[in-house]
Image 1 (cartoon, rainbow, N blue to C red):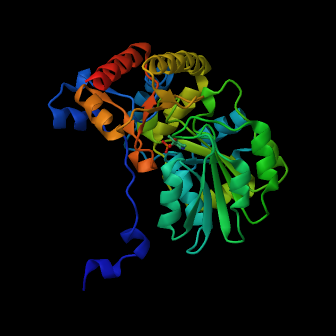
Image 2: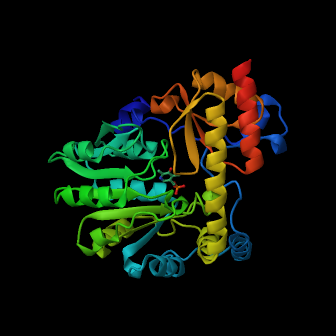
Length: 364
Ligand SMILES: *Cc1c(COP(=O)(O)O)cnc(C)c1O
């Protein structure tokens, strides 16, 4: 019997996520010195983690033989204080990606529908497909989520609606008022998933907690992978009603979040000054890229996140030529935007190098 005959059919057709290329891979493939390569492909923080988080991670490694706290008690208590919610309204995941998958475990069965924007974060669609649910993709308008169209795409079979704001890959955001009235317009049988992976880059991120107080079916997702600079440690969290959080907790693995990540995340929350500094640097870096790209005559999508879309013509060609010069960015072919690249905001020196290399590649 063929192996395929045994397999869950959703797995056979499951598309594969295309991550940003690791520096080591590019160095090996192109024979470059890894220390000369810059990666502006995955919206990571170019300033790394806070020194407090690094020190806490090193301390935690000293007890690497012990299983982590499976309930993430200390981190959840800290997050509950940050969010002004109860400890039992917070759930921690192995990155917020895991929380998206846990939502699939809790809610999705074959035939269900999952409403999302297009282009939006690729993982929503992957998780829907993995659970045999149908992704219902609603085109963005002017690169921004069209909330009225998303609401109109809801049917009796819809279980989940995903809205990321700021959105990845476009960097556009919806206002708090828009998001609140959208959520209040959704029918009772739909869970609204609000993905705020880039919230910390906003001066005043939208506050959707009133929806939780009103008893609505909403879960907000955040991550330590972006402004906190801890992507490698895989820590994300969600906050919601107690009922929804306990369902997500029920389907996770007992030790889903490692102890080093938990310790680093707690310390990262203690360093508010570092986060504020990164936010200011990003603001300046975004302006630097936006201006530089404009003076190269390139179209961009105005962004409020730590990355920016730019239209370069043949995206794959420009991507590979940048890569040969040691600058890794993200081609947008897998998002059906073959003429575009997504550039992560780096340090001022990295942004300069990116702009100069791009100018050179486009000239040749
Ligand atoms: C980067 C990102 C995440 C974070 O994923 P983690 O698993 O926490 O690293 C979540 N949502 C969006 C929209 C993102 O861009």
